[in-house]
Amino acid sequence: MSIKAYKLDEMSHTPFVRKDSLDYFNSKGIELTNDEKSADIYLSRFFPVKSKKEMLLWRIKRRFIPILVWTHEPRYNTMLQKHFPSKFYIPDIHIMNCYTGDVLFSPWCIYGSWSITHKVGLATKEHFETHKKNVCSLGSFRHEPLIINNKNIDLTEFRQQLSLHGYRKTFVDPTGQKM
Image 1 (cartoon, helix red, strand yellow):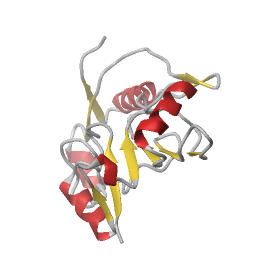
Image 2: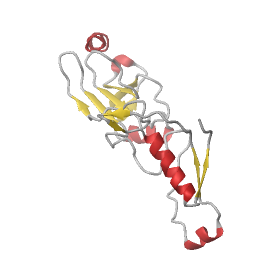
Image 3: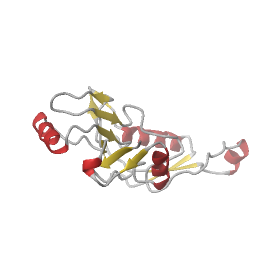
Image 4: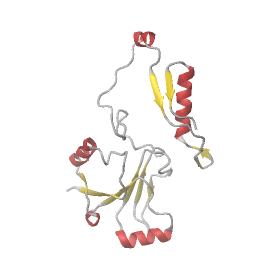
């Protein structure tokens, strides 16, 4: 028996659009469907409703199908709680994001337009002695904190600081537009 999943949005930059990931899901009995009425679970990168009233309307329209909110992009979903059990007006809602710590299948895959297909070997001492720079960092630069529970959980600034630290240590070439 398979589980049928219906995407509520395009789920871009997630494993739910990649051929290799879809083959894996199919091998585990999970298939994507284009028929919302046959779905056993809904998939979304965003929390689909904002209020109890919207959730009640959601339940009337879409039955009581569980929702999986999945994203590795920190600003799409910032919830820290992994599960919201069903109640009268809401279905079972499961959250998988970078804050719950369970969105990556492997450290070798990026859910954009490409993925690393093999494990990269460790660099040798000779590599560092013969190459001027060893890493290139490409990113945007912004100062927009993302505050949850009085803590800045924005990963963009963390990535920027990591890149700048590598630059100061002379093994990273940061690239990108300063804003």
